[in-house]
Image: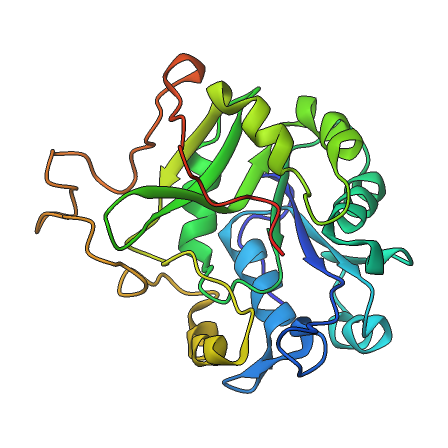
Length: 258
């Protein structure tokens, strides 16, 4: 696996413990597209996008996932033996494995649209003390909070305390929405995951993970020909320019995943 920014940036955290019961094909981490597994492509996207290293939390299919990831000194595998309790336990496991004192970029494994450029954009927009989330426009053009999410080091202990069941960090993000900064990534990714068989067509996105993929995912949020949103603001601008100007994200997509 390649990493363009070893030694700087946040630590990546991929939540890959679920059994994929709704999908019915085994753990989502092991799904394949273009000859590679979903977990490999997500790890590569995070490393190539600027994460210093990546921790992958496993549960169902733990041995198979660990075997696939073996051999990279930039990847650490943490086995969550409580994975059946829900994503909250995997988030706790991952953050406790990483430890305090570092920024962490979190994503569930079932997000094949995430590419290196989206990770780069999010890291570049992140500011000390903030929580920074990728956001994507829905069919009505409204921004919805999604993944990845960067938690500044000052927040990770609170995330561990707040995470439970399948809620993950959702309640914390809602409670602190005034300091959550959204970064529009609609031109790169539509923000959707793989949850049921009808979503499997999204596996075709896996060849984008480590390359710049400005052709993917946009749902036409009114962008101008220069890449702006029609108001002169480019996709690289954060939607919120500071803690006092964060979007309230009414009806936002939960950032804890499923």
